[in-house]
Length: 135
Image (cartoon, rainbow, N blue to C red; front, top):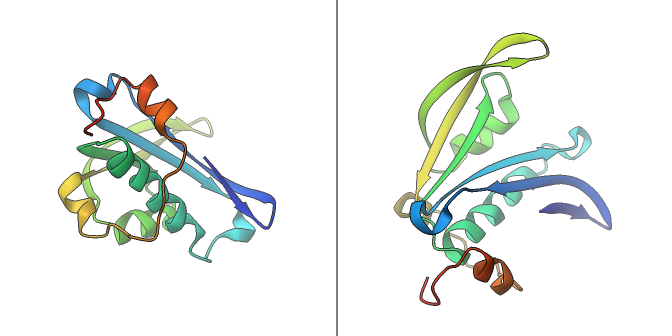
């Protein structure tokens, strides 16, 4: 998904999943241009993605990963009802670094679910994911 401000793409948010109908879990990843950070856009992107994952696709769990020193992304993640679920070391700029893992359940998301987000045109994706009509 792209974040658009007055016709300019300023960021993106990806949603990845494998075997979604069986696992009902998806992972988000996002990027927002530095000059657009600090305006609440990162949180808006994450809330829109979570709304799609949970309300649109019927997920039971959402996950995300954040570098330990990415204070902006950590602030967004911690402002939502994610819980840290672990960590792992990965190569980053040719050095090992710490990646923090977070997860959120459907029940926790419902505590921050917004009523002002509308989902449009998701039926082709629901069909592609082979989701039943009642999800």
